[in-house]
Image 1 (tube, rainbow, N blue to C red):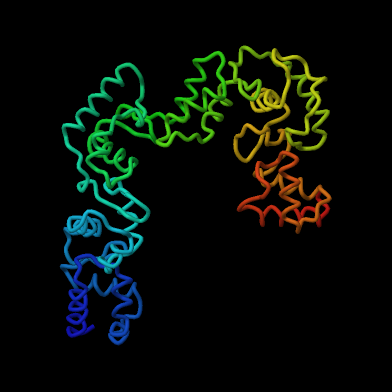
Image 2: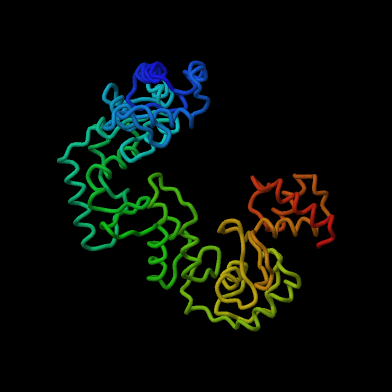
Length: 393
């Protein structure tokens, strides 16, 4: 390439008006001239820049005209002009940057969404050090007597008053990032000492280990304290099933309170499960089950199969309190729960093109908790048709 071309491309780079340029944007903008110069692709452009300019370099998808300025620096500078920006405004304000770069930066710890598509930078929040020190003191004192602090326990009312334009979640995260991040770990809503990490599941499991009995209502209420809006996400059920035995819809007990005759119980289940699997709900008579310390019901049966059976295991899409799921022989090999659904449909007499009938059948028989198959519907129905057509069931 001659000096004239080298000089022309340099002028075009300067005309972009940005120290960082997404190379695809530059190539697209000047593609006509670049083709004339004999530069036919982004890769050729990158090689051209690296060969002909000592003060310009390429890194990943970007051309850097200034070595000390990054795309994130440019985005940060824009938030000095105004407190809040939307995605679209930033795309228009910084046309030389890749849109995915802007999205990635805004998902970083220094930026907070204050409403749908609208962001601000932590430096644009009013977070006085005096209030922050109160939060630090509270956590330091609380961690002297327990292993964690729930973020919902923090008194952030003063910060809320000072930042009325921000939602509570943004204020909570900004306070953590400014005052706590270098001293404490935060996993979800659980704050622990630096170097330590506790999940909500860990805490709920410990709660179950320390109790002889616990009600579902207690567990649900305790889990709700870990969510900013007081919601539950079935983590308490996972924890309770991991540690305890569910003996009824509302009660979990420690394992020592239940005594299973494994051999006889498996024999009783085998009378129902003559094939590879059955829905939990298909077990309706417990007269042949040996007494285990509590009356038999579907909740106790689920717990037994989950933790004690030698011949069977329990499988389900998601933990639940509606007795949804299947008892599966451990000797049966399959890849995922959707395979069981496909086999169940293939064995049925249903017309597999009738999606409503399919959803009703699986729901009514206790395979799924909704009357549809969700995102996996096409794959499950295709597998069911293949199995039925091939005579594999």
